Image (cartoon, rainbow, N blue to C red; front, side, top):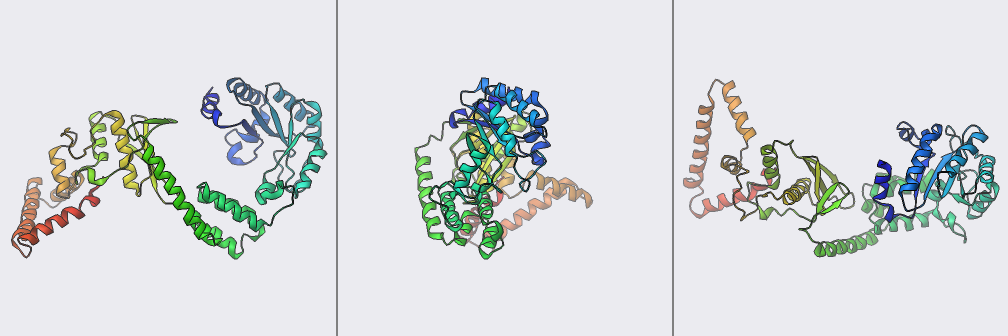
Length: 429
């Protein structure tokens, strides 16, 4: 049931849904996924029947062959009865790796035993090196089509009927696509290293491996100008989308409530932040403290944060220049959705942040710092009241130095203003 609900969220965005039951990697098999399913035909059948009956798009699956030819045929026939549109067969056992030869005879037997399309897989290393080899692999197995992974990743022009292109040209074209579509830099780097293969330790390969952003990768390939022009174009598009968005209208993105909100520091008093208001509200409601999860976008190092309050998640759809600002923006979304004051200039005093805490923030101290001073006073043999008296006398003396000392008159005012100007960023919650 959960699988159907999850898949139905995005079935309108895809042409079909494929279930990979052939991955032999430990991270899949340890969780009972991938090739681990091959030993549990009942579960395979239950998964596929649930998806086929619950979705409007075609469902396919991919398997590896079993040690017995007959067991392989029996499994695929059972899969066919679930109503899947096609099945892909990787012609190797779960324990075998690319260095082992692909078993075309197993794929042939499956093709003869079922009426649904069979897709042949596993020929990248030893059988498919050119476009013409794809046809030969299909004929050798009798399959309706061929699935390629590694051969396509090494040089995507293997699909071209006009002959393969030099891998350097393919890499450059791929990088341009990655930049245009704002692909994650680590994925871009991984794919380029796969294309380099045995040249990964070359000067170019070392530059690619050392790169941290798409901009760094572009520099390695001499595409800095293309990268800069594309970034400007993408930013123009983002600005246009943001200007036409409706920031006051929350939308659901999966299980997250999202709004287009930016944190503008000038809209809040120096000693107050939305995070403070959200924290105080949560305490008064006897809820757990808000939890923030923040991610950083590699291409421009911008931040986006999700805050969880009362088991519900909130975030701004706009990215911020710092982690602090991203968390504040997420807090604003939560406060606005819940209809709670956020501390903006001009808002009536909600009482969420008490007067003592406001003044403490203005004087550069927090409750934690206050408690620490009192604990240190007790440790030194003085009472909390004595410590408080000393602190007030210190503040008073400092104020006198500003008012009557070398900074007098307009100079003193300038000094006060300067101190207020530099303090807020250091006080953000």
